[in-house]
Image 1 (cartoon, one colour):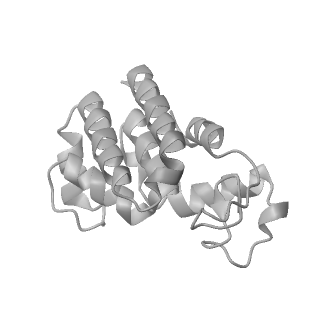
Image 2: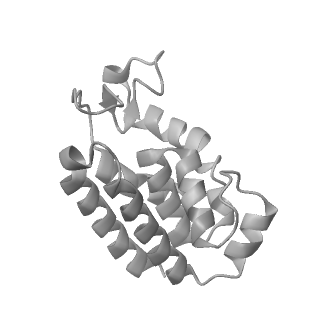
Image 3: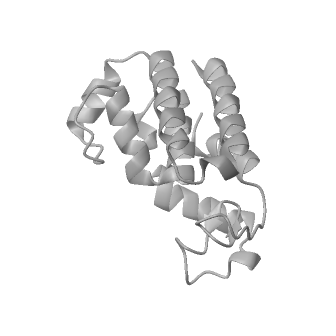
Amino acid sequence: MRFDNAFDRLIGHEGGYVNNPKDPGGETNWGISKRSYPNLDIKKLTREDARKIYRRDFWDRIKADKLPDGVAFQVFDFAVNSGIETAIRYLQRTVNVADDGYWGPISQAAADKMDESDMIMLLNAERLDFMTRLKNWDTFSKGWARRIAKNLKYGAEDS
């Protein structure tokens, strides 16, 4: 799987325009939030615009092309949902290296030695544990849990 397939999966989680006052991201379209991109007209954001942002600001920054396909999607989805540094830190915990939020050669070497399926399972376990501790878990837990369940199914397909 490469970026285009990962993007299509991600958009299945993110959907279109919403402006939920309980969401700390605020106004959001295709998963792109006004909080993160204050100068964008979120309501008019196209799917293609979102694709470009996700490629440049997420996929490339997490160095997804260096990860096994199934893991790349999982980290990408986690980064979009919870932030790039958070996703990298939890992936680093998964591969048993210091979780400094920087994906460098030590982290990559550890990932290269680990089984893809194990990484997917452990990362999703870390992610679910992280999310249950968020202050807005009570509001968004059902959707987040379903998202992670779907990602586990993707993980089974990918590894």
